[in-house]
Image 1: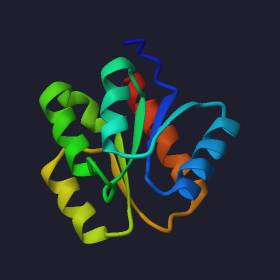
Image 2 (image 1 turned 90 degrees about the horizontal axis):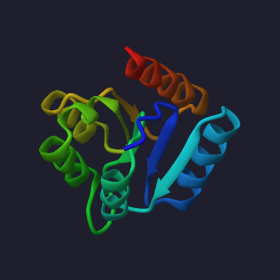
Image 3 (image 1 turned 60 degrees about the horizontal axis):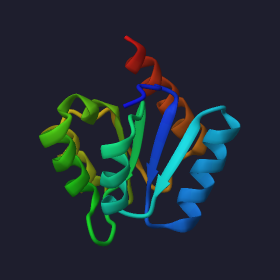
Image 4 (image 1 turned 30 degrees about the vertical axis):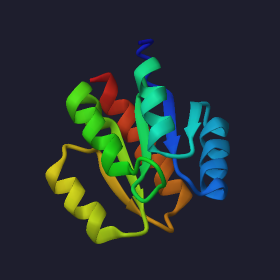
Length: 127
């Protein structure tokens, strides 16, 4: 694990959202990896360390809940670096209460708010 706090993993099955978030974060000087679903995310999480994980909940193969379960089993502290991006806020809110995640953003979200949240999460990672 490389331990770089400015490295971000964006996990979303919606190509437009994933690409937009990746481009915005790269412009903000973050290193960004992406995954199209939870299965790809888990593969990347086993090989890399991320300062922040932006995670959609509703995805094919392995959903966001499956990624959170993986983190709880393998790296529970890393769950505190997850920002959930969800169109289903009641589900996301329940997840936030059950798991020690950083934040929940409701889709559609304000992109500047997303950047602010990522900066706060990576700053938290330095402490």
